[in-house]
Image (cartoon, rainbow, N blue to C red; front, side, top):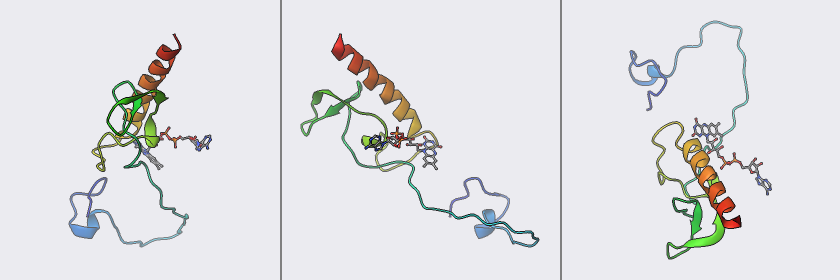
Length: 101
Ligand SMILES: Cc1cc2nc3c(=O)[nH]c(=O)nc-3n(C[C@H](O)[C@H](O)[C@H](O)COP(=O)(O)OP(=O)(O)OC[C@H]3O[C@@H](n4cnc5c(N)ncnc54)[C@H](O)[C@@H]3O)c2cc1C
């Protein structure tokens, strides 16, 4: 069980759970979601999409969740998707502008 954000002075399930003892109670609907992806085309350092042989496809750039995750199927820390998304978005934008010049 993860203790991330929990009370590490407690043991086992008590790390993240506590007794519900006093009202009033409130409820909210919770939906499952996904914060990133593990598939998609690979890109090079300039944001160009790579073909099946690992060669950049001229004029085709991508960034963010449509691309293969930088860290594979791992999520090492908060920012592991937004950081690369912003960085590669900028790099892909620079590549697109350079192609017009
Ligand atoms: C609850 C939650 C918490 C998160 N927390 C973190 C965090 O702490 N740190 C972190 O790094 N990442 C976090 N993420 C992940 C991060 O938000 C996403 O990885 C990031 O927003 C992806 O950006 P993106 O631009 O690639 O895609 P998106 O933000 O999904 O943008 C895609 C856009 O394309 C639009 N679109 C889709 N289809 C079409 C179409 N056919 N035509 C036109 N437009 C279209 C969509 O409406 C959307 O605006 C979190 C995600 C969630 C859901």
